[in-house]
Length: 183
Length: 197
Image 1: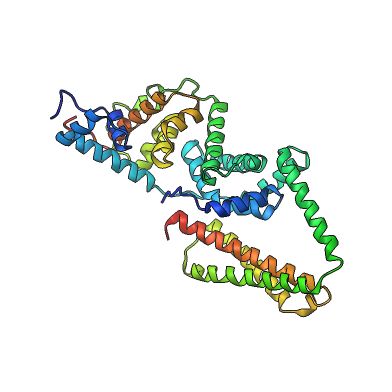
Image 2: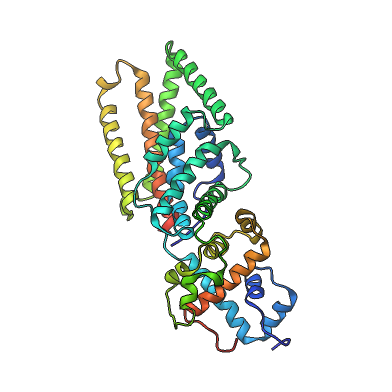
């Protein structure tokens, strides 16, 4: 089950980060072990392949090593780690430039199947969403990020984030075979 | 139905997230179709949150640690971290220098403290019932490694020849033991948090 709660209490997080800043590799490994599953899961949901997700996992923790002094301890440590992981996943997506002008209706795979009756399971339906749309769904519905936070992270407006979420749910409804008869 | 239209998906999602406007709140109260759609949106979110957690197929820690070490040596880490590390190193050197003239009372206090930490972590670990939990391959590998190191350490602690000539070594080993137990606790508590065991 996907549970993205912070696995390290805040007081312990302060102590761990302080030790890690001081060069304690044991503390860094502790952070890695605590968050590797959550970061990898997030990366799997936001990227296209398991290999991409592994790279995001690695890049995320390297960035954490470089940026420990920037965590002020004001919010949860997982919130900070998650921000870095999502940013790394999005950077990978942008770098590849596979769908630079992607919007939901412009995805070829999706368009090709629009008129085909479908009844996918949720995993398959989620995978079928374009990466940027899937990112909005995952960050909002699973990670609990606000549209404002997502907009800032992805460099778009909050209204775009909201509309992407709504259109994604409309698509999911169709793909899951849950079209409402009265709406 | 209240009003002349149904709520849009965006309006219903806002309502689901506790941000809906007055119109859609009132409308859903009197429109069965929109109430059903709101329930469906809540269910999809719940199902998304219930999707399985992934675990990396390979342990990347060694790669991360090595690259971090190289970057740190090349000065890529932030100055703040570097200064903190330097301060830590200075502290370690101070301890090392002071260690050349050990204070027997202080040494006994340090040893007792290390043993108490180890005992406390052992109790926490027992409370997690580690033998009764299923672990995935990656976590099981980490646990096996930590337990192997713990057994080797216990063997040394049980052999006074290992530390009699250098009593501070005994304290170091107890501290190391507490650290290994702490890591085992981390693995098991993380697993508990991830899979809800």
